[in-house]
Image (cartoon, rainbow, N blue to C red; front, side):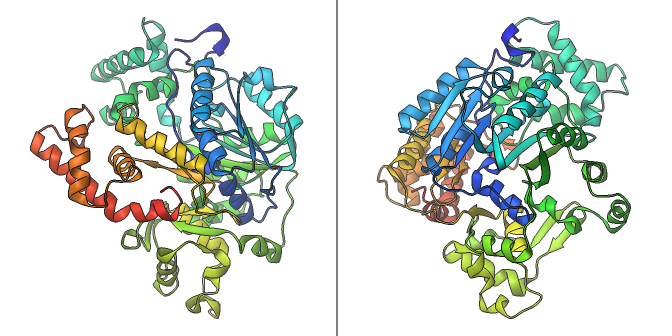
Length: 519
């Protein structure tokens, strides 16, 4: 249910914690550079704001991983702000401030500093037109000239098929009593009855199963909360890009590109016939929206800049050279064949094998990678734009802003150890970790967090010893264990699943945690 102060937003159950690395300053800055736009400079006086921060996980990780910047995070829900403040205080993070503010409170920007970067995840399509106007007014007043905005939201027309189902769920839930997470499950059962009765409007059983499963990032025990926030907001309204760009244009914001970096490469996203259609449309918000018609994109990660300035190719490359990459997978798991909307893309082995080999040894700057013998004198070698966009966009690397060190600070060490300990004590299902190297972070699964916790407390890097330490906790708990998409209930199979996960973490994750400065 909602309260009068919530403006129709679900407020009786807290939003789930989550880390979104696309909101990290380095990632947003890189998005600007890949699209040839001057980014804000990540210096000592850099100010960062997250609107609708929820429980503050992303803001806390960014503050811990970027100790020289100032972070302000806001949310209208006092429970979120209280929880975030406690977490920041426990970790000793002094460069983040959490404020209980609605978007209406923030519209005039009074009492707030000017910001180099503002981010918001998801809420843009969960609030009403008045609050979107309030956000635009805040950006007009408090985003510095040259400042960047990272804005992610449910997008049209990609959500078209789900519009009738969402309206049914919200309407049915409004007739029920109880908490929002309870009512959304009851509404789903009612939707099943509507389907079984022969409705041709709300989709088939597969659609309902897709909704019930929810986000792949959400643990099964949390899916009802996720569904309540995703579908029951009174102002739920997926947005067309052209409408968003039009509103933000009044705040002097211009669209730069997508924080989902692969989407900035038309050859990977669009078929030749689709590109031919777009070629007949002038550049601008309408043309960008047409891309969503072509690929049926349900979620956008837009980056805007207030006062966008185009860089020359030479200046863009000069700023890209000190940017680095760190692998997020061990070398053997890296892929040269990528699944993309047009089918599959094959990265040239003669270029990308040496790139991945170098990154497997240590993080490298883009300038260092471009100077590898296999690339240096080859005119067909990938540009720095391509290397960064493809490897980060395919989830095989993270951006490393220049000047950051992999050496863990006391702050990141406290935060990461506390996050892993929360999983060990069954107070959390996953652990969001801060990386001093990337200025962002990564999320550890339950077993990964338990392995991390054991290693952080001096346990040997031995599979048998770690299994003996971890298995009793998992075997005695109700933690769901999955194999091949199925929940494992039989004790022997559960133990074998834990053994495999511990061994996999040792072989595939510990080296990466060290490279990123987590351990």
